[in-house]
Image (cartoon, rainbow, N blue to C red; front, side, top):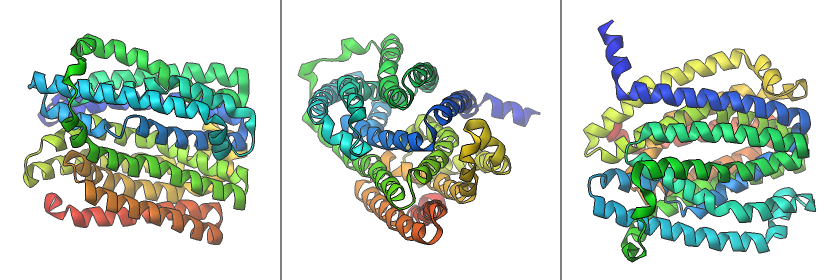
Length: 424
């Protein structure tokens, strides 16, 4: 009994419990949103939603210059050095504001080009990119603020921001989808993150008096240079990655049809829901811990805390989901989406390999191992793209998820070998 009481009293358990509530809430919200999408836009609309999400992920990371993980690291390291922390906050804020305004201008005047690239020749969705250009600056600033308080160890505050953001996203999606169908679904994806900015700003301002810290005279190019390695890492994973998925989806549309692309997007969407638990607890709890680890022994402790506490729960959850897959697809979507059940096994297997590798991949960011990260990530994306095209010819849409499992297995093996001293 004392053993369980000690576990319940640990900070990891408390953070994980609140994070679990946040993830369960997001999954519940995703269930409602997915059901509405399935009813009002169908598999073809789901494919368009997937294309916009991939584009938006890349754009978000460009607008933040890929600084997010670097901000967490330097905020964690300089938590007690107020002068240096203020210099970091001022420099990053000024840099991100400039980049966001520049990107907004470019996006607004090239909206037709991006509309054609993302949605094809259909000019019906030109408005989406005009609105995105207007709200884009709030994206980067919101991510920046969350990264700062994450680095300062305000884990619960970060999770509450995510919870409120999920609720805002639900209400926005329901209203816009019911009013404008597919166009509304696309607008909701663009507008919801901008609304979250105001919530984030209010909560962060109460915590650290953010506005008083910003001073243009404190801008320091040295800080930008130090963070530049994180830019390279983020550009590879969070910019090239979504574009690879976008390219694969377009190949599916051309070779197998837009409905098959919608089924793959649906499987990816389901995967995203349960992976939220792992990715959020990694960002909120484990990344700051890895950043502060001073040697292999301390790093090993963090790694195995993850493998003993997080991984078994994840595998158990996937097992339950696999046997309930027919019920889940009909609950989340409609009977029209039942072919998605054929994709579960390989997607789940790939996600287990991915979760095993995630904590090791975060070590690249924690210790700013830029070259190693870029080489492994580019190789991983290369394997995913060409394996997907090859397997798709042999096994149709199921081949794409088979390629995903293969790519994550290869990536996991590479990282285990690379970090063997910290692991064993």
